[in-house]
Image (cartoon, rainbow, N blue to C red; front, side, top):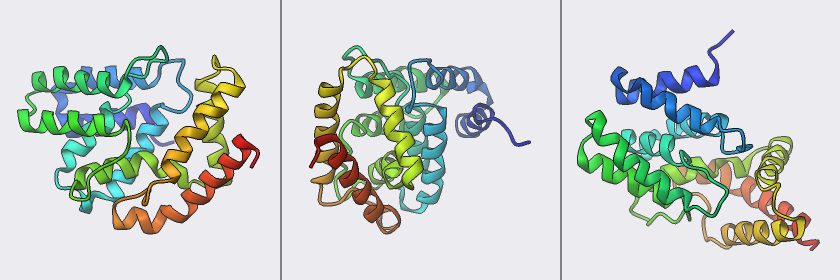
Length: 209
């Protein structure tokens, strides 16, 4: 039997940050295991890291992108907290103590904040890789996409159906209106068409159009 997701993530973390960072890795995994999470979980993080591996050649600072993946949903509160900002600040306070260079820490925090809207500039290769990895789920096959959509709804179980449908439709519409969902050539070729079909289908379900 293969390693558990948690063990694999910890292995990846210590290869990235060093064995002295084991406790930080354990804390990050614990955060992605919080009981209120249904989609933003260790499985999501592992899937993102796998896509980053595939897109590695497009990144300028692969370590920064991988650090950003570990931190991008480290804070995931459902109380109106700006989760991306809080996650970026966690990176800013945690990474220097591990000996990570200041310019890398700044890049990691910038990348984490970028996942709040997924709008990297054309010249932002690190941002393109991270955002493409975060959005790759949009191109999943029908059953995996349905599971993803259901998990997102479960995270917002406290929100009434009508409000959820309105809010979710606004998020999906903003994505669909982007000229390009995916910024790296590899991800665009692999994911763009399937993701747009999934977005259109979910929007139709949410709005009745």
